[in-house]
Image (cartoon, rainbow, N blue to C red; front, side, top):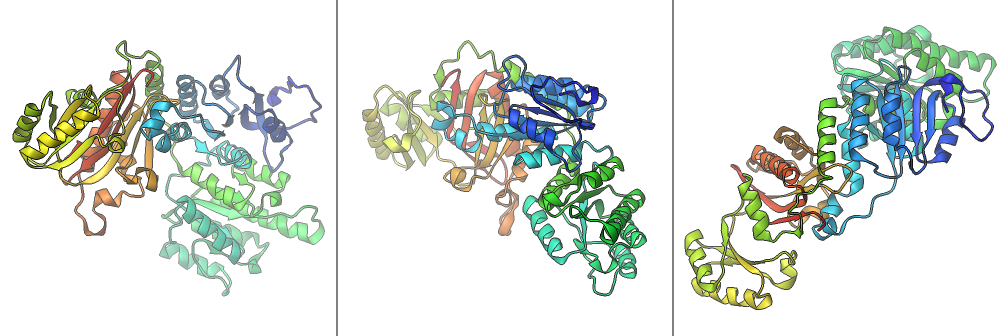
Length: 556
């Protein structure tokens, strides 16, 4: 449906629909139909229902629509990952043209056997990698169809982007103020306290019953006072701590006479305040059905996003705060996605642990000292060389979960311990190598996992060891990733205080951990590998080191 051209490749009746700046690309035909029937100020430019994308992928439509001058945003509903390279290129075009993107991705791909075996799938499943790519592109992630359409509607309004500071919320209801404050905290949206100058101006404008704060309940006592509302919005918009203003506005259906005039006055006060405000203004209703279509369109034409629902309004405010994507970075991710289609000729499944660690050492990644002992005497010699305590492990391409088989022994100090444990391990599997390693001192445990089998190659970093799945505290970064980008991901973890010196602990070497993780991602790409999982990586006040490693090439 090319609404701006009044062209409908459509097999059903469609009333005349006013065209706008929002394009929709959907793998659901019903969502496309429902979007065409939606009101609340939604005006569509193009609607594409591409089904299972036999001929053209959703990414192809997105890339083409990004070049349309009248498109301000694209809503993308997906039921499959599609081609990662083409998607990255499409998102790069949108970023270069400042076209907003909102994405609703349903369903999760079935995890590959290799990822499941190494626990990677549990913490960096395809859906998480896909979301990380979307957010890396500066696009908004929608939780449902309603949110998808409202986000795209807000992103299409020229000049609505905030500078990335704080949000102020205005309402005439104490209940709405509380709801807004709770939801803002839940989604990580900052509501800064108002400065002294703004507070002074507001006290002169507000009735005595009002309490100045953020959110601000200006009360219904000044309902319909156009100039007062204009001055209130202006005062808040000029506060240095505020970079965006959200005004809650409800308009019941079928009002007329004096009530209609009072609602009109409130709307005109908001519009006047937005024109004078130093910060962009958003309007949202408290309940979705209380956003009148004509009123929403009036706001949008004046440059104010109009959003149906308080919670969704705050989600849109958060999306408008975030910076757009970097086309150069997105095209680098596209190149990595394209390269992983050509696996290394040596690709032959799982590597033994000692092979994986040899690959890491050769690539400049710090790994605990150790070596393979072909016999009992070599194991004793390794104890003398490395110094106690040491660990003994079986290392084989067929062996990944050692503890379940009793295929490792820890904290060995004496020659007789090493001899006895070597014989016991050799009896479990005489074909496996025995790896003797220095026991690393305790440190903060991280998981570092790079995988190439999702929509794009990606790196997962999070709290490691036994806490990996229990805490589910993992950040995903599409590859390639610089150490600086990985460090930001580590500091975004809920458990970041473990690394930065929380509760009186000394700060740890986050930079070293980030360098180690970034290099691991590089090795995945350089070696044509499918998976590298390091768990744990121990982080100290100075340095970081790999203790356990898994790696796979080709089809693991």
